[in-house]
Length: 193
Image (cartoon, rainbow, N blue to C red; front, side):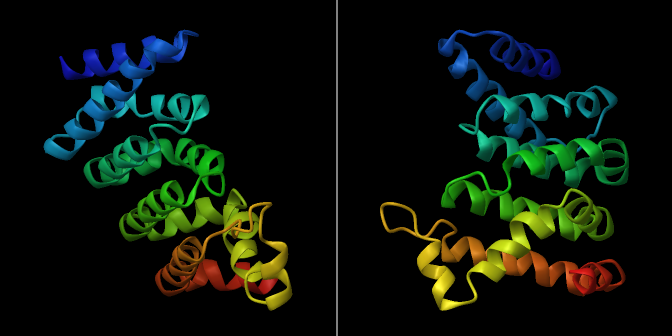
C-alpha cells in the first residue's frame, strides 16, 4: 500500500508541468524517507522504487534532504543487493548533485556519502573515482582552497566563498575515509594525478 502511495505521489509530480504538484512531491519523498527509516524489511517492490530518486533529483533540488535520506535508507536496508543493483544510479545521482548545492544541501550530501563509504567502502570509492566526482569536484575544491591567492578567486560577487569552509572540511573527511578504507584504490588514483 505504501509503495503505491509513494509511486503515485512521485510520478504524478514528475510527469506534471504544474508547479502545484510540488506539494505532492514533497509529501511523497517525505513519506518514502519516513517509511525507510521505520521499516526493517527490504522487499522487492521497495527495491524497485529506488530509480525514481534519479527522476526526482533531475527535476530540482528542493527536496534534496529527503532524497538523501532515502538513499541512506536504501544503503542501510538493502545492503549488498542494493549497491550491486543500483551503483550506476547512485553514481548518476551523485554526479547530478555534488558541487551543485548550497552549503546546507552540500553538507547533507556529504553526510550521505560518509554513510555510503561506511557501508560500501570499495563500491563508493569506485563510484567517486570513476564518475570523476573525486577529481573534478571534491579534490579540486580542496586543492583550490589551499593557497591564499586562490581563496580570493573563489569568492563570488557578494564576497562569499564559492565552496564554504565546512564543505571543504566535509570533502577532506571523504578523502581521508577513502584513503583509510581502501588505500589500494585511493593511492593509485592520487598518484595518477
